[in-house]
Image 1 (cartoon, rainbow, N blue to C red):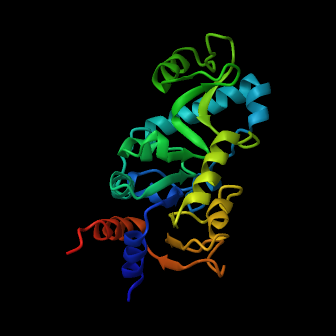
Image 2 (image 1 turned 135 degrees about the vertical axis):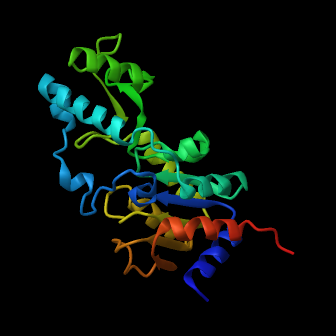
Length: 254
């Protein structure tokens, strides 16, 4: 039996799936990954949260970087993997989608807010660092282009993308939602992630403590590959494997 056949069987037999996703599911949408040869991690210096909060120069650099990203891939569409995961939810088989990605493509494909944890936030909203209000990025990018100064909230607080920057605390409520889902799920499927970023990568492992089956699909090595709790490891293109497996798993039985 092939790895894809085994994945189909796991998905078909589960009712409360935790889908954990990383940058590898969005490269087909034109969004670069983080640790590949041309990944964001290797091609740019990050602006740290404390720098953003204490330096006008760093805030300008941050907004310039975000504006360039938005112009390059900000309108990237969801691909077949995002749509397949949304179909899985509509079939009533998803406990939660937990993503490390900040591209907002799960939501754009139709994954509901109630079933989505964007553990590192989203670039599709702007958040005030003082009052917490969220807003659409477009007007703020327009203001930055016009003035060259990082925009401010109406309360006077600093505005930044609703993402978790280096050195910024994760949202405790979102972490809790992810772990609660891991405690309820009957299958974990990790897609397109090297499973190297913590604490996010510990969420699938938390589910396996109850004996929950754990499948990984990724092109390239992951940090969990050698662990005995991994039920199924498929090496290959997530976009070529996962939509087909999900559609087969959702086919009516005769």
